[in-house]
Image (cartoon, rainbow, N blue to C red):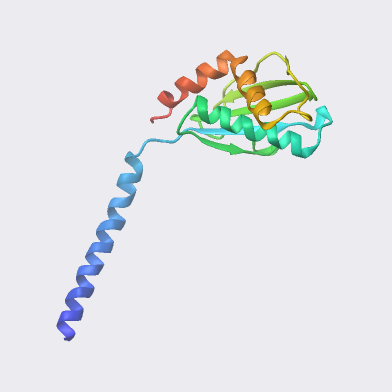
Length: 159
């Protein structure tokens, strides 16, 4: 019985060692998942946190549609700078209850860019969830350089 348990213990050790030794190799060969950092700045607009949060949530969805498979993170202002070359930061700036703009930066050394301020169809404060989604989509489509970046950035982050 003792030999049997020793033999099983050695086999388990070899199996675990094999898995651990192969893990870094498989991790290194997997593609890098693009990171999009979303910072929502709503302080200038004088809207409720609930309304601001609803628009920000819908921007997450719009970005996910524009760049499927990306890792979208809502971040605070102090975490908004991209840390690696495959990261993109998007700034949603609500400048008035019915005006907003998008800014963005690709990688830590990328030049910050921005789209013109857009008038929104209705106030963020009174908009329905569907209207918030439409606002987010419209803002993204009024930033063609950002859309182009999102469509091509994944090709740049495959190491």
